[in-house]
Length: 233
Ligand code: NAP
Image (cartoon, rainbow, N blue to C red):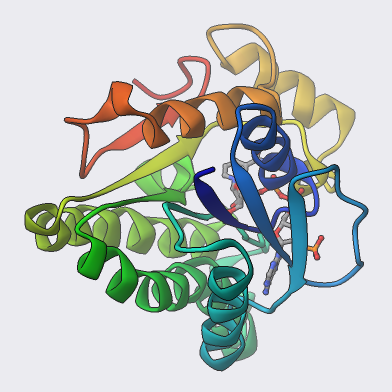
């Protein structure tokens, strides 16, 4: 069975991806951070803070020793912070960058050597459409996702000759805990601004990830694929 490692697999988009990949015959390792989730069959959890490179290296080693080489890495864990750019402190900057960009950096560093030696592998990062457009009051979050996009494009160039494909999915507004600070009115406005007229579901993002992991995407690399209901074209 192929093995996928998904960060932030305890809830939201990562959880939906874990369940979809398991349903499609993958062995799934989920990294979670705070509460220990209960997972379905074929999904195993490892507690790991993705912003800590040592913990990530250990988690990837543990996953590979239990379930074999990682065929697909999904760097999904992320946090958002909202506020005026001028009010953010260095601590906010470190936390957001270390989780959203550092998580990808640490996970890719831990997984790439094995993929290169096997001359195959797929890496999928979860970005955000705000990384492409910028968002008022989400400047740090947007910057962290812009870094993810640039890293994905660079890794694709560097790792293509080793048979490794690297892409990002760039969600629009997706109905998860990440939206809990938005008012009902904000959510309604965001749904109305989305050409498809609604918020997306975590499962819809997961389906794009499953496609990118598959042979159907065998000539797709270095792309930032929008899953945003037409919000950004
Ligand atoms: P969510 O429901 O808040 O879930 C976030 C996940 O990230 C949780 O599993 C959480 O683990 C994990 N996580 C956070 N910090 C971590 C850390 N330091 N180490 C390990 N895991 C950590 O959010 P979501 O909406 O599913 O977001 C998933 C990804 O999609 C994020 O990268 C987010 O930026 C991106 N995204 C979301 C939206 C949206 O509208 N929802 C839009 C664009 C992009 P715990 O449960 O253990 O805390």
